[in-house]
Image (cartoon, rainbow, N blue to C red; front, side, top):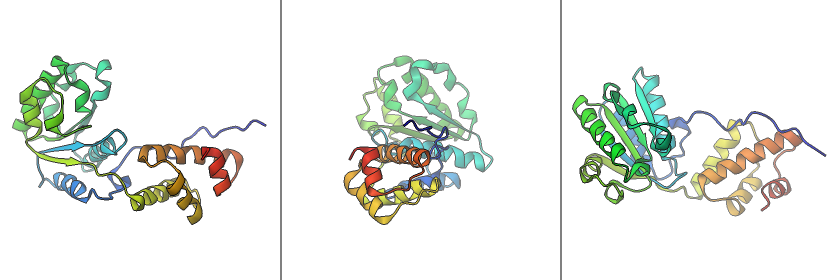
Length: 230
């Protein structure tokens, strides 16, 4: 029997800071809040593995700045192959520049020089800068040593992984977002048997949301087990 899957993915929406599960990252969130208040460091560097939430934080900070009437730009350098270094020209006129996946341009001297120039212009214009990569500034395989040293000038944080309490908070938030009832026994089962990585946990909840809507089933352990093949 075929099932018509819902077209909309209810868990997908623009990231915001309120959606970020803080866990052991309160100091990082406090630093971001201070920059929004105009009292924080001009430069914050965020290190974390893929799926750790660093992109969420950069996008959320941009959204928070825009909500306050400021102008921002989010630059996903993981997509630099489809972009041009010239797109960095003039961004120092903005209030906030958030540069994601800095490590993706390592070894590309055109991009490294362009980013170095942007950094210096933003510093002079007092534009707030957020950078992120898989590792901290000192460990980035950048060819331009001056760029690497500049990125270490401000505050640097490593996104701390979620513990079980944080993963439970994430599951609860995801269920609430799409109006799914998540019984305690199902939540415990997902914590024990489900994926540990936050991005994989989000993908699992997206799958369960679609399946629950399509089959008009509530979340039970047997249903979750069959859908996620646990």
